[in-house]
Amino acid sequence: MHPDTELPERSALDLRRLIGRREISPVELMQACIARIERFNPAVNAIAATGFERALEQARAAEAQVMAGAPLGALHGLPLGVKDLQDTAGLLTTYGNAGLRGNVPSADNTLVARLRAAGAIVTAKTNVPDMGAGANTRNPVWGATGNPFDPALNAGGSSGGSAAALATDMLPICTGSDTGGSLRIPAALCGVVGLRPSPGLVANTARPLGWSVLSVLGPMGRDVADTALQLSASVGFDAHDPLSVDASPDALWPLRQVDLSTLRIGYSEDFGMCIVDPEIRRVFRDRIEAIRPWVARCEPIDWQLGDPDRAFDVLRAESFVAAFADTYRRAPETLGPNVRANVEMAAAITLADRAWAHLEQTRIARRFATVFEQFDLVLAPTTPLTPFPWTELYAGRIDGQAMRNYYQWLGLTYVVTLATNPALSLPCGRDEHGMPFGLQVVGRLRGDGALLAAAQALEQAFDGQAALRRPRPALAALQTAQPALKSIVTHPPVQGGEGGPAAGMTAV
Image (spheres, one colour):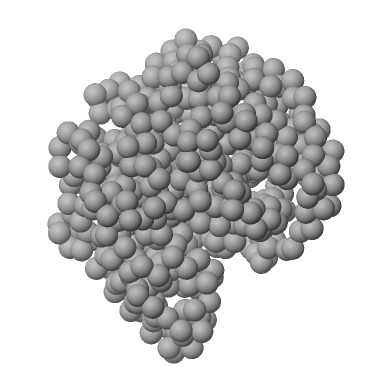
């Protein structure tokens, strides 16, 4: 087995089994992933800071535990990519922001700490938009992340680096986070799986508004099983997150088998209010017709959701004021245009607006609850258009209609955010431009395990049809670096180390 080309292409689940059976070494796997990053990352720019020396040291320790017969965690020895919005002890964490070029946290955030405890080895940070604002992964520190299927196009965001790293098999598992679609959108555009869990399932102690359900942390993987495996190692109560719940990993893993013929599926092209390109509508209708014979029911839903756009405007602005108002007053030049737009929007929002938005969100959540009295899953497109060039900050027009702001084009995902139901993007063939098509699969609130199990059943059915199975990028076309991806970097990235300069951490 050639380690650079074959070993990292195995699923995370297979790799963990091979490690447990002593058929491969965590060191061998780490070396193969590092070699693959060095080979393919220049073409997509998915990886930000790296900690290769420390990762190799930890892989050697993981190998020693295997050989000693010690108990092994669910992710033992698996290289992990961590989204650059999530603190990693001793490893540069910039949030894609020029003011944080030299930020090396002293502690992991809760999610990273849990994944380390399960045996995962933090190998690299994955690229994000400036402060995570927007669904196009580009920033002034690391530059832009290109789509693995065409590096001139958008990889999505804000977990775009994680999605692109997974699509090119540079890492077996990666973390993400999601407010308006940041796990689901890049997964859809890059042809991988991204899960937005129910709020509180994965503790998030970094969220400024502790009671807000908008922002969640979650897993990304190349298939449903890998995603579920990572989720099972991520859950648990944390007293510093008032929304967190004491979930049992056993409820999430292993996934139960689901008979597709028993499922009742409801679907919508646009939730009755989203602007969607005609091409995506056609592709989605084609997918629904393919799924229809497999399931018990497959019916359209009349949503009547009110005004989710305005509700999301208000609630999103509220969260951005909580996170960035002080920085906006002191040093607005350090914030990107998307962040500033959200903070400035809040200036015109009143207490009455906030009360209305919370009431509207409650109505939306209750409408979803009513729908799930009749259906087991809801299907919709994940994104309203095919990937656009990363040089465009956001999608300004869809189907001839101008977007009101930089995130209105994310309506298909932020409607589900408002409802708070768990949702994932499942690869489902290609669109009419040959780019990955992501099917948004929504489950019952707190039904994350059932959602993943049903999604795996769909995935298995898709895998039997060439037009529906997960697409893979042409790796031969990714052998050449794309200097343009670095073109929006205004200063060279800080290169520091684990506890000091140049101690095993470099910019890739």
